[in-house]
Image (cartoon, rainbow, N blue to C red; front, side, top):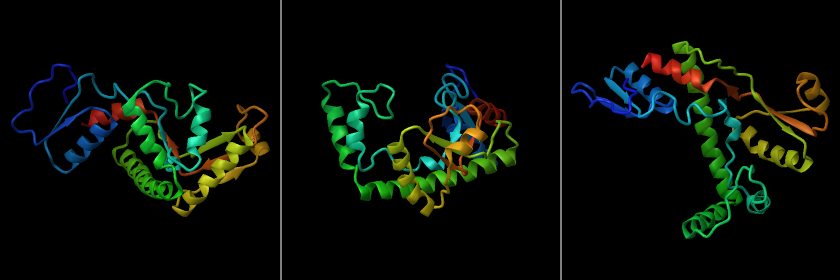
Length: 220
């Protein structure tokens, strides 16, 4: 694998050239190598130097619902007052951005949200299964833990909203369960008093993204 900024030209025997040595590029290269193909991976900065390094390492089929949901337009108006909101756009005159926002808002309806959730759930569940199989098969030392994830709430309205989103997820095979605040505090002492509820998604997982990329790079 070439990881230098001035990488050499692909060799005559290379069948596949993969541009980008992040988790996607390296995973694709490893699969191609497994299939007997000749592969060269190139990257201007080196393995895992971009988004594959700077992320939290969560594997979350529970994130299947899209951002474009019924009620998002009203919630977005409140988010505009918070720079750390999940959807924040600095107010400015930008016709292209305005056109994008118009298309986004048109998708904030029940029909489109349900279809997007169904499609995303299928992709995420499949990716979750394939990733764990890859880690097991290749014995990738990336601190993978199939320990699920908790969504912790201090706002009753937000807790109710997320419970509603969990209903169609269960119908799509993404399990969840509620954890009483008292039990949550006992199980996780780092939590502070004042939480109103917890939703656990046992099918979620975590790993060290930098370690995953390093392990993939060694095998490619």
